[in-house]
Image 1 (cartoon, rainbow, N blue to C red):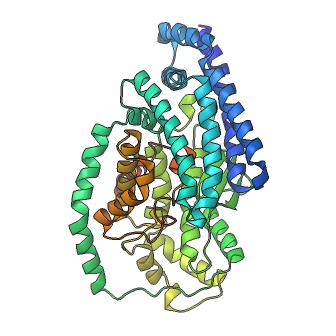
Image 2: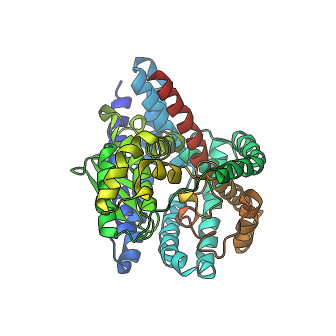
Image 3: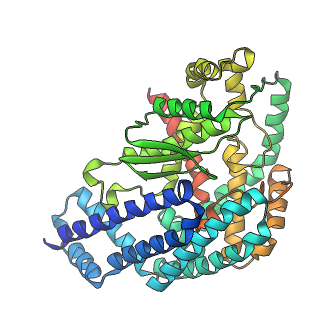
Length: 437
């Protein structure tokens, strides 16, 4: 059959161009001078439109129909690849090209403003851009909802996790939200009965942290012949399997924040590196959903690198790097610090007990905003009230509240549920791995 090989060739070109866009996005967040923002927004939008045109080309639908009619001649991998091709075509075909371009430009402009607004605690300055991104996000969601016979929010979430629906998310999150308050009180009461760990005293020079984090990333499998480690306002992992781009942020008084950020993002990078090489540029060879992707980053950060075994190895490495000694840098103390539970404001630094509360809050808020049940101007108050209801604390400002994550301001609506569902997956996978050892 001639249709399927032609589809593979077409999707290979799309994949290579998508990889180029990922590197451009990384550069925008890490290396690009501020003056390049307008030009970069045009470049990324042009690439997005080109990728959309390649995917929605009328010939593509003809090829998909022909290949599906003769799919009996395909092996298992090819058949799965064809199904993923169709799914990607449906996502692209649902949204008109002019909306793709407008949305890309709005998200680029909004992200640029967020990078200044967050450290300056300027939600008022961010609000017009959030409104515009939300307006266009609703249009995209409505189009995808119609194509996939689901709600607008579910159409957005489907891009990050195929077939994920509110009816599946709500029971899990509602159950956790009801369970958490009493459980958290019990955990904190029990924790208070034990000797408090010693907080390591800084400062911890950032130059030394960079080298330490690089060594930690190498310990979990990152090869820096094919990777970089850089700094950004919001940690992420980008690039491509042959050229991983890992980012983190550092604080001079807390080396653990940067280190755990690197280990988390290294987990993402290792998952990408481990994708099947034979299908590198085909849809079936790419990550299918972010629940599994997040599980792999969290297995590294939460299960492996907060374990007594890993910290037993890491403790002397950390102490030597900072030329420190004493009980604060002993493995047992670092383990108690790494597993300590507390009511905290920042999602990316939260412990395993309270982390889902941060995700549930964001999920409920974005669901309300997409459904036009929450005006963006009311977001700070709704955020603060929601966090207080879940964790009993209120942010002192928007920098530590609704401005802390990049997702909404850069267009990643519907992503948040995959974090907690990924954490649950990670816990189960790690438990199974230990039992099979």
